[in-house]
Image (cartoon, rainbow, N blue to C red; front, side, top):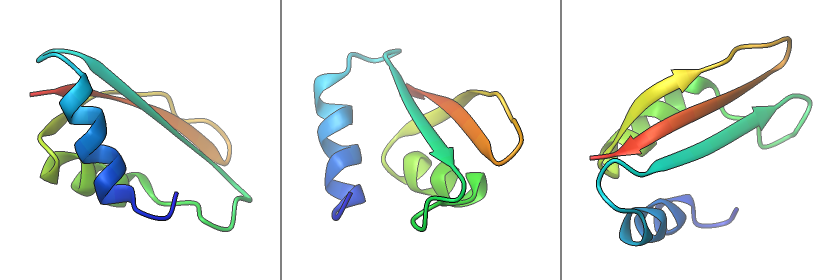
Length: 66
């Protein structure tokens, strides 16, 4: 995704407060981002971490629109 900030802003604009956004990162994707980076970016876009399911080399994370 070339413009992640714009994608998060668009996601926020189409979700109601309390709506869920799911982001999954999987290795060996060359664009893999650590959870801390994804969480910081989503929190900056007014989302709150709701749930993470860690697995070997991957994680799906759910964020709630604030």
